[in-house]
Image (cartoon, rainbow, N blue to C red; front, top):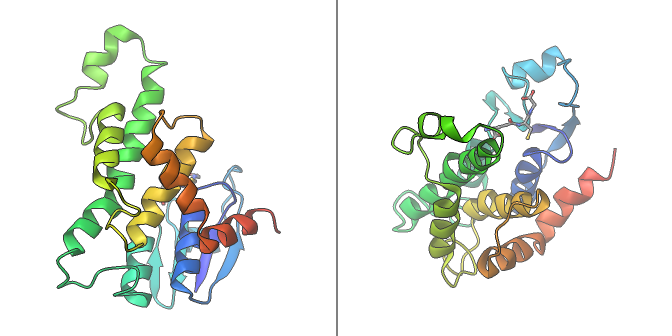
Length: 205
Ligand SMILES: N[C@@H](CCC(=O)N[C@@H](CS)C(=O)NCC(=O)O)C(=O)O
């Protein structure tokens, strides 16, 4: 298995996932801050993005899809509730929440600061956007976590790789609102040895 990866990007959550699953993989370091893309990278990721996973014939180039695939294929029943498990729906929902709700709401909140106020109603029409406001997104996430410690309760899963890395990213960008629940969740995520291994890779060549 091969992961196209660049430090300090969404690729870190894919490394965290592979470490949690305990599978063998190699990292191919690419620099997505530069415009050039190798043919090998483009074959793995048509948009030349990271993370991108090659696993035999499989090609995947989205962090949520990669987390779901790795959990189902290599850690089913451990990092992903099985298809017949009553927790399966909740697992899928929250795994996708990170990229379908948190990330768009986060970028919208940044855009609002630069788009003139008079264009907000048209540009950010709440009924047309597929996500809620940033405040709503955070509140719903906190409610979903409840007493935790993880999004499924006591069991850690691949959904926490997506959500926990989002909490860590938000904090890194200074965008995590004051939230005891999400601060503690980011800390718990960072305390996972597999996440620490993923971050350690960032400092290596
Ligand atoms: N939805 C994708 C987004 C991937 C993405 O945009 N990755 C960024 C780094 S965080 C990237 O590769 N940017 C370089 C580019 O778009 O050329 C995912 O979650 O994996």
